Length: 249
Figure 1: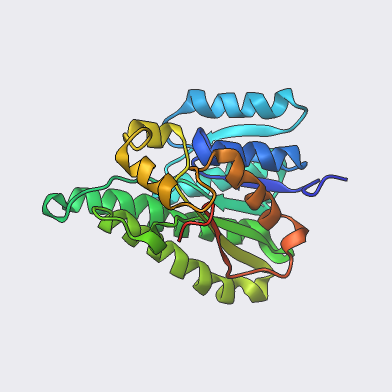
Figure 2 (figure 1 turned 135 degrees about the vertical axis):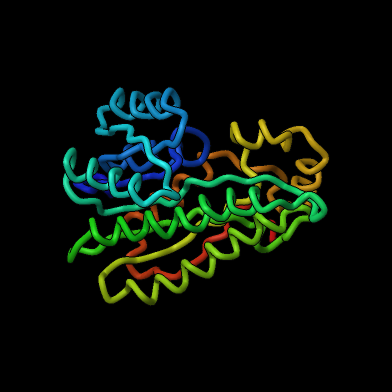
């Protein structure tokens, strides 16, 4: 029997990159997956096609996690299609490195609304969906909270909040049989890091030079960690922050 047989997982921001690979990884272990996306419907549909093409079950559901009505709709659609959720992966996130001289209110709120408020609202929705049976919540944070690179004050601030929230909610939700853990990836090659100009940059060279395993990550380096945290293999883990970074700290 697969590790996640008969489980229903909601993965936010799953149309590409780490979220897409986590969705595929959960499905490969038997989970039925709700692939959430904000704007990239084509990407989400491709992830669903990949999963169903391999014999799994999945649907794509649009929704902005920073909006309460959208989050409620995501979980209502999940329940209607597959029943209550068992797993939530809070992967949706945005980032932009900005020198302090260029910080704006708009950029602050853009990153905090998705990365922090969105995580809280999705978690609220998951807690209601899980019900008495409990579940597993996996927050995707970042090693920026350890390496604190220049010009990342806003983004690192959001992920520092995610780390703290993970530990708070592990204590708050433990009595409800809900485990809350975080994965902190190092630099991972995704569509986003290509678009941001990190791939092929001096930043990548420096990251590889200071990473003990000598390379940046790939989405399939992160997905197995999420599968572990979603499964009963990690039943005694909550409040943990797992650094998946090739050793960089």
